[in-house]
Length: 309
Image: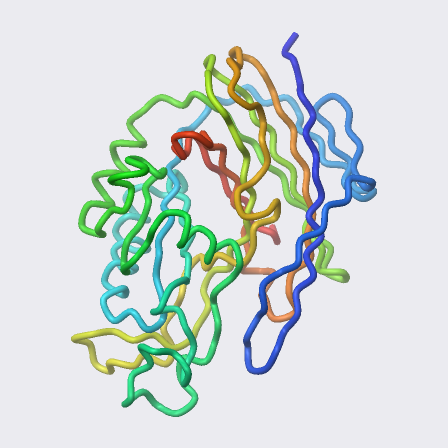
């Protein structure tokens, strides 16, 4: 019989909105009192999430963490390649998190890089968040557009230029999966509470320091974007995809096991819940979960689920 380890935390997020579309960073509070569990079962705040038997083969996926900003005039071609050609090529095997952070993500009119010719009222939406700002700093991002592909190459060559993204993603997807992830999401429209659970199954033995990270992204946000060599340069109805909104279990996730050898067949269960901000579109939100090595930062497996089915 497979051994199951239970690791649970609840992320209760207090989101406060100030002014025009500006969302201040969430305040994270831990409270384990609302979670219980059984064999492949997580009960989160009264709702049961059961992982039924699944004999399907594991699928390797790749995480693309794109660093972008609405003032970055060179970012749209990278975003177009990511969300058009790469999405068509890799389909559901590619999971994207777009991180708005740095100078090019600041809001007008106060941003240092705010164009003097930009229309009045443009670029005032703040897509930044605490976890995005933390990742931007942690991984030493200094320019856009850049992306990390499963965080390969950290700490010296993890920042990939967009013309290389497709090849790096293809290489990562060619590797056999060593972890099988399954996730389930429940959503209460009345309270806007998202309850999520993930099941991590080791398909091969692994020695290292594994962590699990769970985030919420929001897709199809229509707003301003600067686009060099494009007419118009200031696009009022640009579609921003998969914008990172919050880390459900903090900025760096929770430890599955620290500096140990995990045998094949080991299973971990994690459960979290959080509340969507009032101005997030639940129909466009997704929960992204990935397992990574906290020493090398390498992402080993990733999965995503829509909040609203």
